[in-house]
Image (cartoon, rainbow, N blue to C red; front, top):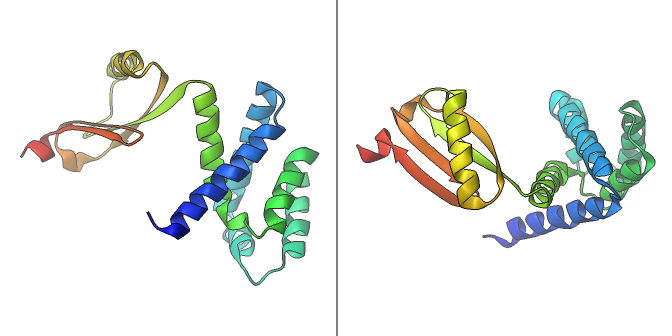
Length: 175
């Protein structure tokens, strides 16, 4: 892993941890998660806004003013706005998505949940999803959230990804 990547991951973790420390209750955690989701969606849907946030030539003061205005439009509370201002004042708005991902992972760990990526050639039936999640819950001891991805190139079978573990039982691999 490169030093730059390590710094990026560490920065994201530190900011996410700081945001988590602002939360006094599960309600507040969920509220900040919703705030973050709406900010990320706004950023993804508005290329100009995204370009503005990641542009290193624009001063932090200008970015803070824009963040304040957008945060008020999105009805964020003062603590979340202050968090965004701190991120902006340190010139770190380019890592918002990374902070969001780490924040979501922290919430999942706190709630004893795990995201599982299940890749199949066709969409999984609900009955199969339920059986798979029950089995994986017994194995991991966590509540499983299945994200079914369809990839026709695997021909048949299944690929299960849990964090760094990958179980590949696809026909493509066996051929």
